[in-house]
Image (cartoon, rainbow, N blue to C red; front, side, top):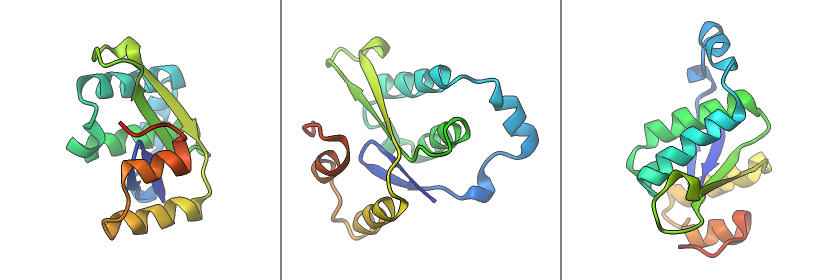
Amino acid sequence: MFFLLNDLVLELDPSRMMHPLEAERFEALSLDYIAQLGKEMFAQDPQAHRQNPERARRLAYLIQLKMPRVNAVQFFAMSNQGRVEDIDASFKSLNEMVVGMMYQEQMAGALNASKVDQAVWHRQAA
């Protein structure tokens, strides 16, 4: 299973997703709370998904827990102040084959932020 976080395709292992007891514990978390965690992560470091891919994976797992059909999210700064309140999030459900093809491009070194922005987010790459 693949998950697009900003311009990085993460490979998620369903067997590493939360065990039933852990899932029950995290079920109480709201989507707003999970989005806030992502906003805080990207306010601290706009390249958090690249600097700490394991932390990015954990965020992707939480998003998947709340919204199983969502397989792409972009956290982006609306200003360059580095404040949590300036970070916004966009969630999408993409065709799994498309995300898989992006993963293959990424593994070949051919995927970049501009390509992802044009194909998915329709924003100008920073």
